[in-house]
Length: 310
Image 1 (cartoon, rainbow, N blue to C red):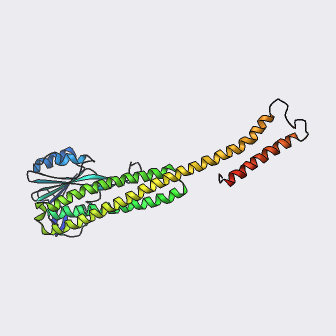
Image 2: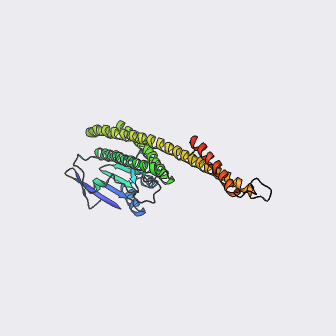
Image 3: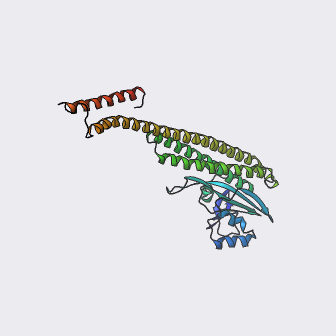
C-alpha cells in the first residue's frame, strides 16, 4: 500500500497524487508498487528490497543524491502464537530532493500518529521529520521496556506460587526481547551520532537541537534495556536454583519415606520365609512382629525429623 501526504499548516494531510506529496509511505508494498517508486525516483532496488529482511541492520547510505537511513523500530506481537512478545524490524527512510519516502514491511506504531494526522504541529522539513520519527521511535522503546518490566514482575509473583517451567519459558521469551531491543538501540545510536556529524543535518538549525534530545532518549532506552536485562537474567538464575533446590528437597523426602517403608517390608519378607523363625510358635507372634516393625519405623522417622529430612 502506498500513501501520499502533503504539508498544510505544519501538519500532514493526505495527498491525491505523488507529485504533490511531501511524504510517501510504503506499507508492506507489493512488487508493482515497489517498481513504480523505484522508476519514478530512479532509486536503487536494494533501497527498498533490503528492508524485507527482518534482520537488516541499521545503516546510513548515500547514492546519487538519495540518502537512505535505516533504523530499527520496536514491534509488539499481540497474538499468543508469537515466539517472542516483543521484537524489532527495519524502517527505511529515503530522502530525495523535495520528498521523503518511508518503507516498512512490518506493522509498527511509530508512524501511526503522523499517518493519522494527529501529531502536534511542527516546522516540517526532511531533517526535522526524520528526527521526530527517531524521537518517537525511542519513546516506543521506553514504552515497551516498561511493559516488559511489568510482565516480569507479574511472572515473578506467579513463580513464587507455582514454580513451573511455563513461567520460566515466559521469562526466557522476555529476555530474548530485551536482547533484540538492546542490539537495535545500540545500532540506532550509531546512526544518530553519524547523523549528528553529517553536513546534511547541519543545514537545519532546529534539527541540530532536536537530535540531542533524540540521542538522550535513545541512551535512556539503552540503559533501561541493560538494567531490565540484568534483573531478568539474575531472576531466571535465582528461580532456576530454587526449582533445583526444591527438587532436591522432594527427592530427599521421598528417599526418607522409602527407607521408613522398606524396614517393615524387610521384616515382613524375612518372616514370610518357610524356615524356623523366632516367635513362630508364640500365640502373639503377629502382634510382636508388627509391633517391632512399627517401632523401628517410628525410630527412623524420629531420626529423620531430628536431621530435618522432613
